[in-house]
Every structure is written in C-alpha cells, then in structure tokens.
Length: 202
Ligand code: SF4
Image (cartoon, rainbow, N blue to C red):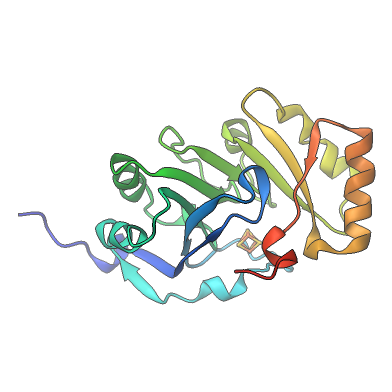
C-alpha cells in the first residue's frame, strides 16, 4: 500500500484555471494553468503577490485529476515560484499522461528539465546560470529602470534551443517603446506582450 503523502510533500496550489497563454513563445495556445503558491524571492514589483495564498494542498494525482477536466493536453506550471515545491513527482506523472509541460520559473533552483517541453526562465536576482543554459525561453520584464546592459547580457544564451524575449512591464507605452528600440538594434531578441491583459482574459 502506498503511504499517504504528508502535508510537506503535497503541492501548495493557489489556483488551477483554463485559458490561453498570454506571454512568450507559446502565446495564443490553450493551456491549463496550475499556479503553485508562494515565492521567497520577494521582488518589489511582483505582479503575482496573490499567489502567496495556499488555497489547496494537492497530491500530484489530485492535481492531474483537476487538470484532466479540461480538453488541452498542455499544462503550464507557474507561480509564485513552482520550483520551490516538490515538483518532480508531478512532472513525471503529467509526462506519463501525455501532457506537454510548460514551466515558468525565476531560475533560482536547478531542476531537471528532461521532461519539460518548454522551460521559461524569467531571471530575477537569484537566477542560476545553469538554469539560463537549460532554458527554452528567457523572458525578461523591462521597465523604466532596466539598464540596457542588464538586457543585453542575456543575448549570449540565445541559440538553437533558447529564445530570448523582453516584455514591457505592465504593457506600458514607455516600456514598450524601450523594448522596441532594443529589439530593432538587436534583432535576435524578441518581443513578448501580456496578451491576456490586452484582451482582458485571465
Ligand atoms: S520571482 Fe516572480 S513570483 Fe517571485 S517575487 Fe519575483 S516576480 Fe514574484
């Protein structure tokens, strides 16, 4: 008989919902979003502070059952910071069930990406170079304070596997203008906008 998981081994979940990817390489693709709760990085401008709240404690099997209610076989593990939780059993289970797994992380934990279809690293102060090298997508949010040098330092990771997107913070006009200028000067960098906010969906 398998032992029941202790609370510490369960996943802390903020919400699970079905929508369309609004950012990055797979913008426009239908996906089930599993938002895991909590992040210890503490960025001042965090736009998912609400994800600190643990609304459900779930085993990987329970999370799979919740995700299976929707028709898409694409799941986005996001947060908060999903890699602060015991993610490997969930990733194995989703993969075994034929899911295309997308992960959105700040890159602060070195995790096994072998079963992950698209690992998006949004680098913050504690990002690991190892994770930048493993990323399928590096996505940097750009605001008025972001230095050009801070943006350009990620160019070296662009390659066959890795795309680099910059995303104007809050879809703001001035941030967008800054992104466009940099992209025109550095055409291997790509633009990501928050489509879901533009079309007012979750
Ligand atoms: S790493 Fe992401 S989730 Fe964590 S505090 Fe920063 S913006 Fe928020």
